[in-house]
Image 1: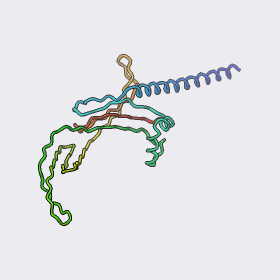
Image 2: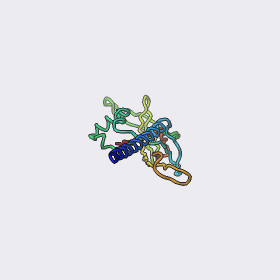
Image 3: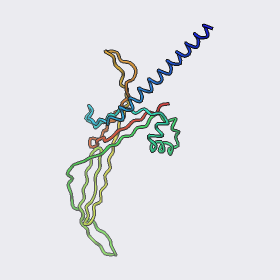
Length: 197
């Protein structure tokens, strides 16, 4: 009888330890999520003088992702993917801002309208660098403009280890950093959601 009671006590203790570890891990995840939601993305310039943003990773379960990010979940399903197969999602918003004087030049355009030859003078502008092409024409009653911007966003997800004195172990938080190679681009917002089972 004593052996049976000892076995029951050991089983109950082992079960209590497993449940306690599970709830501690869940509590840490929820605290990290609260911190990630409470802080905004930090916009900065990295060592290469590129616009960058840094944000803490949001860790959601599949059911939480479906409930809190319903629009993203619908987009994932529209791509033909199952939500339980998705590891993570990321979103970045960048704005391109160019403030440059562009010289105008006059151009003569010959148009045929109702069998009459008509000469119009329009002002044309064009500016280009490695990342942005801007061109257009200014007519007597309208402006036609074309802007083409090319940008590459570099994304890095990294972990921040826990620390005690000089000892590092485990993972305190996951963070994402996005950098833009286009000097005209400023990263406005960034979001990274990790889906956990």
